[in-house]
Image (cartoon, rainbow, N blue to C red; front, top):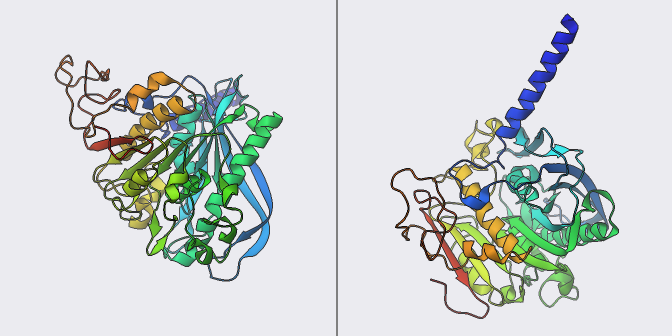
Length: 440
């Protein structure tokens, strides 16, 4: 009897621990999150697989000539599940100040081994930033899976970028566009074959999402023409793929319905990343997200410039005023708060991290639902908004700490889906194809 009691107690503690981890998961929005940040109706499954691309060149960070080897990419797949689970804890690491990995845990809502929900769901490729990992963007992968998306997040295994030298970035610069294009094509192939963890994905409805170096990669994989200067900067790896190269058109992902690019670089120091007019080759609807004080990739010139230059499609720009570059990672885990370097991977100097990712979840959901799922009702969340979030009125809103969401026009000019007292500090701009005027 005593042994039985100890066994039951231990099981209860384990389940309570898993439940607490799931409750703290970054993907779970707070009560002050905008409307569409809320989790969807699907339980979340997660699995891992390895994709192999034979004979790929990779420029080493020490400046030596690229070497050819099979490119093995571990990918994490979040998907809508057909059964509930208990959550999980992810184990990952980021480079510390001196290049050595610092390990930490991330609580998650997803559960390994769950069966996929019945149906076919849009495919999303989620690309992390330089020296990041998929786990630090689990907030978005899990959130989208709960809403009926299959999210494939490659682990690019970048070298540590402690010194922030261009030599250390040659590998990520070369491989991000190539890897994203390969992962998207391979995921589409496996989805069509109907086997394995990608059997539930719909290859005809594909979206790309990337942050920082991943944001650069998804723009290239959407058709953005790369600057010829990237050929020598990547020690020849990108030579066939830059603008005018023999294989430049091979990077563009097929069946692409939408692109989300968070804090993408337009240039790195004096190295341009895009050919003149390179953004005009992107034709899929595109959402840019950035902080106005992003001194890593720049704002204007920078991300806002890319937004204007993407002239042949409808595009959107969400700006967090006074935010910097670290807007798309989870909040700092306890193991990453002991040094400034570690914490600075995650935290913004002005904005709460849970607020940043909740707002991004809201807008990314509206954008993907509108352009990937074809849900025209979601257009009201991204079209016709006042440019400045601080503006707007809702005469019928109760005074005080009212938690209701703005219904949008015509009843309210406060951004649709935002609580009246939780809508300050942002701007949202829209441009139509070949239009020179920003929306009002």
